[in-house]
Image (cartoon, rainbow, N blue to C red; front, side):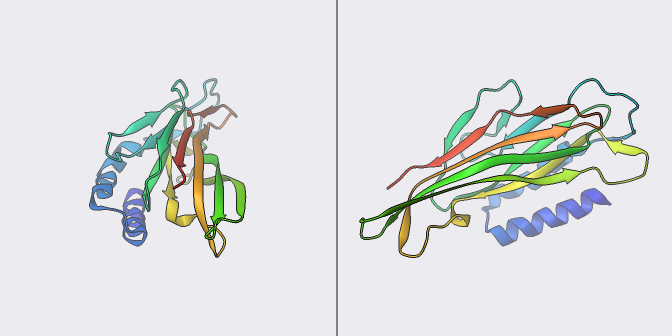
Length: 189
């Protein structure tokens, strides 16, 4: 039942966010992000494998793992898409989350003043839910990325936006894994 609810929720999110039709391909890929149920582990000495997946934005899908090099990509004007964080562990995954930050530089339309703002985010988080005593070998969570969701104060326009994100996951015995970081930059005009 949970996969059906997730697909319906994802479909609603795509419609509300105004994503292109090509983003609907992501819905078909969700099957690969569901794990199998396993018994709660008595011990687990290895951290989960964590991936940050950037959907195809015109140059192919990008998958960042713990051993990947960080990537920097250009954020296109009015672009909206979802990052996918996935954690996988044969003994079970407790949670998966995003961690990152946003930096925005704005200039007054008459060009006389500039402002800057920076903030961090820690989430959203997906935690294990389901049958008592059973856990899943894989969890995923989505993070919308949109230049339109950011905003300068009234009378100011953006001159540079930087968004960074990485995926972090944990098993039930405190083992954590994390992906390499992805940085999205929208250069100034």
